[in-house]
Length: 416
Image (cartoon, rainbow, N blue to C red):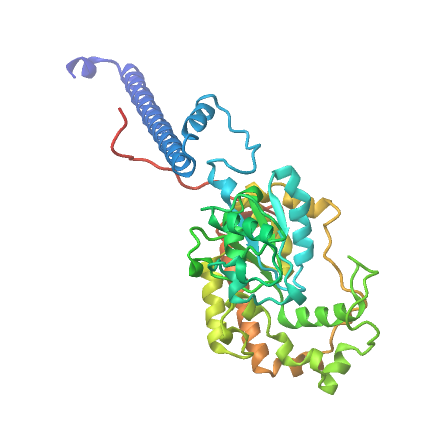
């Protein structure tokens, strides 16, 4: 310090500046070391997670099919994984079932066509659930996998009996014969040749765990403003749409407008006809189909939140498609671009549809049934808006899916 005091003023200032620069340099070096340490810790954590995931995959493969563990290990060590196979692999994505129990006149055909257009490219299967007379309620025996006695089935030949017994005696359904009675839950759960699979149909919600299924499907759905949906369905039954314009519809020839129907108190436009979205989400309980049931509304809300991966709206269909692409890229990679630019970029439009007057809308809104259906629709919209707000961000008018916002660290015990 004595030396510094004897130095000229300018020299002292230069020395102080040099000392400050040295401190800044050392500080920056320390910061760089800290950043390098953080990156190294993340890399180590990521490596450990991948190792754990690989061990988990091998364990799952070994439990699923003895002898496949070595094949999976060889594929992992060689860097292979291509995802070309559609069945019999250890990848959990290859075992996924998406179930779209579509509500009529909510844009479901437009969305389902996207699934059909993408299935070959993304290597999954699409299957339509065609119920008798489009009845959304399945019988209990059709839902379940009951003990099956082929001898009690009328008119079945001896050779067919043996085939039926062979199917139901196996621990898992590995082949499908459409001439045999194979019930829905077991079929969907164990039909390995059709996994990954996208099932769709006009079907009320069904709880797979009720029947002891080891794994539930991923439910998705779309809802629509209740009055708009009913008006669209009313004209659809009379005039069809631009999807299959030549098909004769059930009410074809009836020229009565929706306004006239409401004014006259006709059955096709009665408030009871609004009662559809709630029972589709409520399920197969008798009370679900009791129009105006508050219990059914509560159950539909619970199922929407607890049993559905995502529920979108017709009015925001593009946002819904973007969301399912972000959530389920195994199925819907490329869906948003296809919807915007491809031949499916427009909704299936009902022909000759006339918008109802304000008086007609007011009359329907006086119904307690409309109030419950509207409450459910608003609940679904609010839930979708919440999910969307936490999954995407807006940039230049476009919704961009957010990148992964978490990683794993401090994983113990450490690997040797």
